[in-house]
Structure formats: C-alpha cells, structure tokens
Amino acid sequence: MPSQMPYLKNGMILILAVSFFLLLSYGTISDFRRYIKSFFHEEVVFIYTSSNYPNEKEYKTEFQSERRTTLVFGPYMPNVESGGGAFGGKYYYYKGPMEGKEIVGLWKVPTQKEMLYYYARSKPGEGIIRAPRDGHTAYHVGISFGPMVVSKSGLTDEQFNNAEVVGYSMFGNPVSWRWGEWHKIYYTTGIFTSSELRKIPRQFHEINGMAITKHQYDKLHKRCKGEWKAVKCFMDESFPHLMPKQLKYIRSRQHAEDNNRLAGKHPKPVPYRNPWK
Image 1 (cartoon, rainbow, N blue to C red):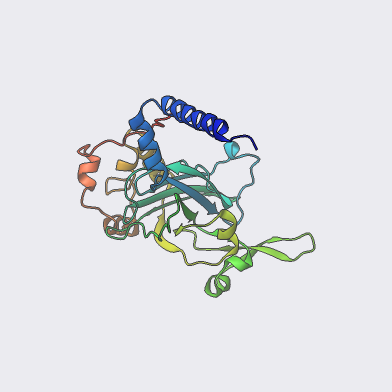
Image 2: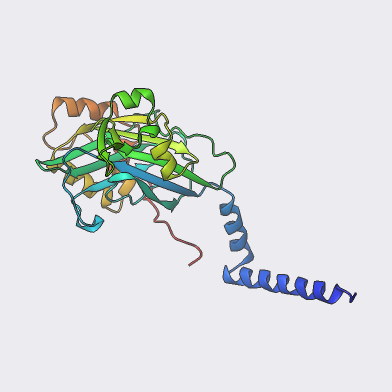
C-alpha cells in the first residue's frame, strides 16, 4: 500500500491556504476574531410577527397595504413593516443586553369601516422578559400586535375559551383561530420556529396599550422614523388632543430619562453597519 504522507501533507497545505484566504477576505486577523466571537454570542435574533383583526381590508402585496407597524424591542428597532397575518418574520443583528429593556409598539390596521390606530409602551422596570437561550447562537422572538392567528393546538385552554374561528378547510372544518385583545402587544422569547408558534401552546407576556387618533399616530410615527428613532419613539404629554385616559396611560409609562431623550441629551442611535461588506 503506498504511503499516505504526501496526501496528508498536501491536505494540510490546502487547509492553511484556505484559512489564510479567509483571513484576508475579512480584512484583518482582529476582524476575523470579532466575527468568530459574534458567531457564538447573542447578536442574531429571529422575529416572528402576527396580527389579525376582524373585517380587515384585503390587499395584494405587502407594499400595497395600508397596514404599518413600528416596533422598539430593547437594543434594536427591527423593520417589521406590516406585521399582519399568521406568524412569519426575518432575522436581525443586534448588540447589547435584551433583558429588562423597553418595548414600544405603534400600529395601524385598515378595516372595512375605519382605520385603527394603537400605541403600547412597557412600564418602567417591566421591560423584556427573556427565556434562556440554551446555548443557541440565534435567538427567537414571537410578537403579536393585537389578536394573533394560530391553530387550535397552539392555544392553551384559557386562550381557546376566548378565541374565535377565522379559517376553514375546503370541507368546512375550522383550521385557524383568532385570539387576543385589540389594544395589546403579546410577546414570547426562546428557541422556536414560526410553525411552533402557531401549533404549540404557550403563555405570552402582555403589554397593555391604548387606541390613539390619526393625528397622534402620525406625530409619533414621524418621531420614530427620524434621526433619533428609538430614542424618542414614545408618546409624552405634549401630544395633541389627549383624553384623560390617554394622559393617565402616558404618565404611568414615563421613564426617568424621557425628558433628556426628548431634549437630545442622549446618544443618537448608531445605524447598524455590516462589518463584512
């Protein structure tokens, strides 16, 4: 049998060459090390969103929809866009701790009768509750803006008792249910797929919200899309036409740094930059 040494030697040379090429492609050895570090740390999150209201207007594509959803979830502000339908989503990169961080959501929904507008913000000290990551590189978040759509197997007994059928099979059998209150944000964190969110029951954390007017929504949406983005993405007492119930809600959600955030005495958000491009 011929010696295997030449093949082993050639194989080692090939491995070293490929490794050197990868180092060059990432710029520097330090960049490569940062990439490896980020790969094994919590910097990637999959966000699955859902939302379904009775008598919603139908639309052909997401880009033609009048739906619009804005979310601030801890250390980042993902572009969830419409957020409608059954659970589905995308992945995002982020840096910074998630546990206990603020949640803000605003969303509008076109129905056959009117446009609905909602706003929700977590109370101080009642930020994100995060389940263990269990050693996984990527993390998962399921969020519903108002009612969600799932199968019967995806509901607890309590949820099922407050759900309504919204979808039927070709034989007339119920296949999907709508569950949740119109003005609330529901979320859960952990390791799961969008299919598991629809089919496996779980308890969701709830953030109570409130209905707002079009004028209030437009002002808040403008704040959330400006250069200060998540820093100023919340309602305060300066908003027009506040009803007593709305004012009480806003005051109950005030955070210690709100005035400084609105005055620009807070670091601006740094846009995410992919270091490998």
